[in-house]
Image: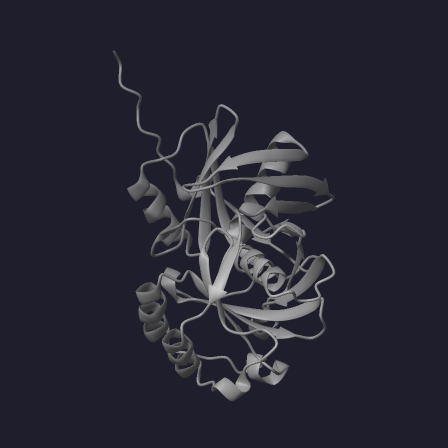
Length: 286
């Protein structure tokens, strides 16, 4: 029998889409590759490094939807929200508005895309969420990384490990000024995140009970900071539900302002503990 030939991809095959954009500006750039079968893993990793965005999504047809894998410039990650939104936009443009089933490495989710002029409105359903209090030693190490102290934390939202398809440390700060002056050394952040299995750290400030400003260092993927992080937002929304935060079923997240790439995300939070979070935003072709 003839063996199937390996699928090859090039940079020219990859769409570049900014997810969670603020109108015609901002958003988090992602690469999107769509084909009939996935290229070899080493080729996907190489292309993600060449693209240089925080994530590139690779999607291939399967019987009941699409098989999806996500690669940062340095590693494969189990789930990426902004690349999923970018993929939803690409699928809607290529195949029409609708809901698309996605099979990830460790979960099955979906993304919806709807064309809206030059932009596409997209929504994803995250994997199930969970959270737990963050160990004190990890909290102290993370605060030292950023030059914060425990007095800088918002006591209403205690430090936590939150999961919504990937693992994140949540640190809520008590002022917008503290969030704005976030800085850290990339290699030190990479060591900390890799040692504790963190994909990102979610730094958040509550402007109101339903409106948050966030920043997401992504040193584990070789990226100093993400301007929009759907996976982190899903994990954060699930954590707010776990602690009984008065979210009213929905939060708005502003991210990327301090990078000059203002992004807007919406998380819809159901009542059932551990259930999926719906994260929505718009996407624009770059």
